[in-house]
Length: 313
Length: 290
Image 1: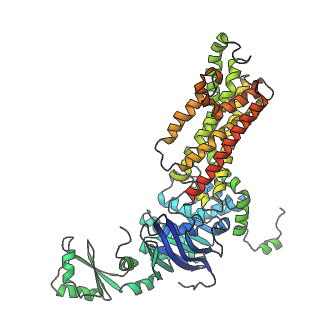
Image 2: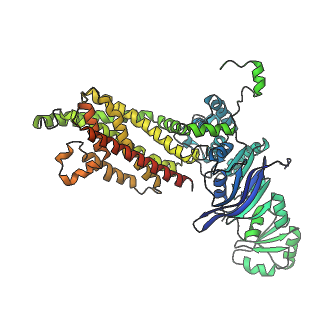
Image 3: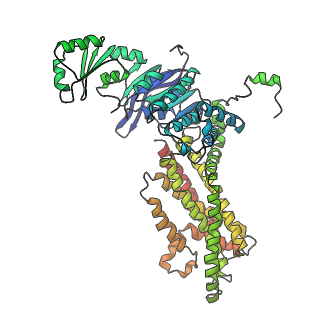
């Protein structure tokens, strides 16, 4: 957040919609992304994030609304728009019959890039993706995290200024995710505009300057992670577990503590600026939770507040 | 290109070890012009990774067939039915049919499972689809690559046919493009069909069993079509294999085909190929773009 991006937006969407028959996958969303910003679409599965990404990526036609990427309409200037982008799709689509390095070379050819550029560039990207020692391995011999890093390396072969990442770390173990976040953070530092979808709040908090919370094809809220938490949640959250039988019944006895109460099947959340003070009030009422935990509010809480549902079911 | 002088290095202002990509507008312009070839290059590189398997089957198949049927069976047939095949031996009669059917069978394999692979299993098409290439170029590039593969296989087949002395006519080599055209006439409609298959429930195995095999057996391959009862001859008439075989026979041993009929054969194959190609483009665009 050290830089304040300015200038005309590299991506601009107005009332963007995509319907499949009666189903409104994307239902009139609007946003602008300035150059160099890291912009996130946060929402549960089926919220319309991937559909939005595919429209930005110039591979899916919108039903209505306006959309420009670098000032170009992807439906009129598909190749020109896609030439600006690096794309990391939700599902890897590497060519498993080719070796790791050849995947990069072949992809670079789609941009008409000459081999004299591609050979050193491929080596540089393998280094960046920490795959140098796998250069001649077959793709199907790679782990999930390595395949993901290779997909990211592949998306950078044309040195794009805009990188689209659709759930970049879904399905990866924590260590692999942290390696990936580190690589993405470096790209962000080098000035690449990142557009990413995720249903992981920690990912959104780590990587996004600004994000929109999306649910059922609509934007529920917009802002920086800190601002969204400030606007839609309290500073702290007290999590209490009374055992799955009692959580809902106990909730009635907790009324009045903190700003807001959220009984969930497995626990009760009390939203309060001072969690410890709230806990004291709970115990002073003679209630003895099995476990109690005070933590900071997160985007998960924002999402729960806005939609009444949790992000990952 | 000449060696860059220090002045020129400064002029481009790029560190020598880190070349820079050309601008997106150049990428887009090149992709618009050469995109089909870029994708063909990719597919050929993938094929190259199992080139020894391809080469072994390209050589092994004709050798096996020509020995078993052409030599073994032909000895028997020529003894009992000499002169039944327009004055040539059974091997010469059979060879052009085997040539065309080998190409068609290779096309049947290449235009089914790899297409499914592109859409579903390994989703290979979705990589280029996100690049500056268009869906038409992905279709065209895949067809170009498979055509190159069919041509290579057919050339090898023909050389082995020639080595068996089964292509007496000087124009024999012209049977190669005819066989490739037959492969496309069968393969491109099949490509359009494959692109519409959402889930593999054994459809391709059914195509092999109930389309390819009967076509192989009843297209005048092993005996002239007019020895079949009239009510079965239609199989040959609608079969790209029969049209390709008849043309091939005319070219390899001078089998007498009237000029008008030769034109019909070529047109039939061309029309099938073009219909399949156009249909495939529509189906690909719909499926990739949703």
